[in-house]
Image (cartoon, rainbow, N blue to C red; front, top):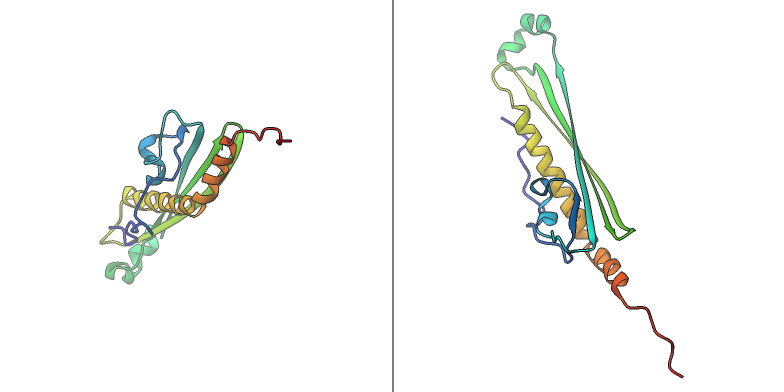
Length: 160
């Protein structure tokens, strides 16, 4: 069982104040704020990607077999997962935002309990998606202003 449970989001998920279409990524695997802000007709484009890496550490079987602490629950190793999420937001050929968030989680295991790699991966993915959402919420006003500035019609000649 994973001791590092999936953390509750810092703020409840809500859509962004602008819409975007997904150019890269799976819509089902997006942070909630992006999922709620998709529109196939928007000129704003989201490019989202997650990369996962796994690592393991194991105490040697010989050492663990002769160590009496093994039988009272001493750790025999550690499973780890690192998730790197990257998001670029563009409007036409203008880059509005480029974000990278990283989460690493690890879980020790012993003779009597072990978490599954899937549980650990799920917790890490949820945490990195929440970090992306929080970053977007903190940047929402700036992004909205940047999108709106591109939509303003050019100023006409000054009246005489």
